[in-house]
Each structure stands twice: as C-alpha cells, then as structure tokens.
Image (cartoon, rainbow, N blue to C red):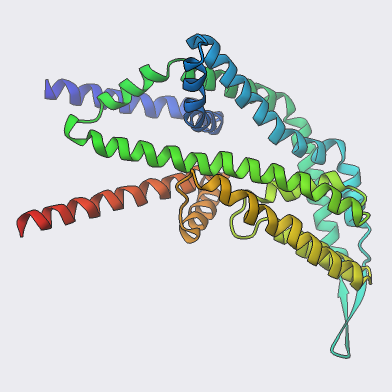
Length: 332
C-alpha cells in the first residue's frame, strides 16, 4: 500500500510539473482564481445556508468575484487607454527647468529628461494594454470559470487535499488552512476595500486642488494602497514636488497637508484597522519582504504569493516552536 502511494504521488508530481509547463501563460490567472475562491468560500457557504442550491450559490459567488475583478481592472484600463492623453498632458505640463530657493540659495532643477522618460513609459504601457485587450478578456473569463469550478466543488476539493495529509498531522493542516484563509482575507478584502475608499476620498481632494485628471490620480492613489509602507504617500510627495516646480509653495503645502491626511493617512487609520480585526496580519517587516521579494522574483503574481508564502513559513515556524516546547516539557 505504501509503495502504491509513493507511485501515485510521484506520478501526480510529474503530471503537475508537465501541466504547469503547458499552462505557464495562464498560471498567474489560475493562481489568483484559486486564492479568490479560497477567500469567497465562506460567502458561498452562507448563501447555501440561506437556501440556494450548490450551483446557484457558486454562480452568485463567482459573479461577485468577476465583478470585483472588473472594478479593480477597469480604472487602470481607463487611465492607460481612454485617458492616456490627459495623463501625458499632465506630465508634460511640468516646466523643463525650475528654480528652487532653499535657505537663500537658488538651485536650478532640470526635469526635461525625467518627464520624457515618464511620457515614453506611459505611452508604451497604454499601447501594450490596448494590444493585449483580447488576451486579457480571455484570462478574465478563465478566472471566472476557475473560481466557479472551485466553489462548486469546494467540499470535494477539500477532502482530496486532506486525504494527502496523514491523520496524525491533520491539526497542522487545519492550522495552515486557518492562517492561509485569514492572510488571504487581509491581502484581498482589506486591501481592496481600503483602496476603493482611498479612491472615493481622493477624487474630491484632487478636484478641489484643480488637477486636470482627478479620476486618474484617484485611481493611482487607490492602486498604491496595495504597496505596503509606501502607499499613496509617494503620490502625494510627487504632487507636492510638482507644485513646487510650478512655483506654487502654497498649493504644495496644501496638497501635502490635506492629501497626506485624507488620502495617505485616513484610510489606513480609520478603515483598515476595522477590517483587519478579522485578519491575521503579518508584521510590517515580513509583509514588506514578501511583497517586494514576490514581485521581484515572480512578477505581479508575487503581490499575493510573496506575503502568502511568508505567512505559511511563519505559521510553520510557530507550529514547530510549539512542538519543540511540548517535547521539552514532556521530557522534563
């Protein structure tokens, strides 16, 4: 029986490696779909308890995931495709040179090369997104189908995974399951809600300061909420520098104070803590290591994969520490 299990396990590992090689172009989409389905599992079960059939509950939950993905991606597509000309005009409005006075000394800042690089990058990104639109639509449809399939067969998938774990180690698997669930909740739900709230708050602020593309800037502020530690602060600092280059220190001080408070600080102080009480958040240092390391190693998928792997390692370390302490107490 043991040798049969080893053979089946080896065959599954080989088949999995071949499958990963063949679907490598969509593996990021599948990964995001799996993690989203993991987060939406409780919602599907709640709908089932309210009387919906297994199929209808899975369809309703998958539709929510699909619409959420559209809400997240649509503003980026608008900024990079529909409103690309406005974003380029905003960058090009920066003077080629600016004189900054500090402590009685005047410094001439040359911005021409930097703005040219930013404009070139924006145009390249917008062109790439427009060209990849059909592929993005296919991946979005694949995302929805994978989420539906996992939610529809949630119990079957859970039993299949637990069957791979020896009975004496099931409690470790359950602890990892709990940690992964709470970590993904923090990575998705908390970040998305905080980012959307930042977007809503940022629009009137940017309108009040008279920026030409307030929706584009608000979208960027919401997306930056996914970057730990830095967040929308980098946008506020950039706008402050922009106003200084235009020779308007009053507007620079205003956007730094109002934008820094309402856009960069308020969502983190008022919204995130309320949602985060239900999530097992990683310490800031570990989260940042996972985020940056994940992006640099595997690309966009690392936004979720990096912190998730770090969370799993942290949980295993806690389980190992508890086990060693238990053995030590038993021996004494």
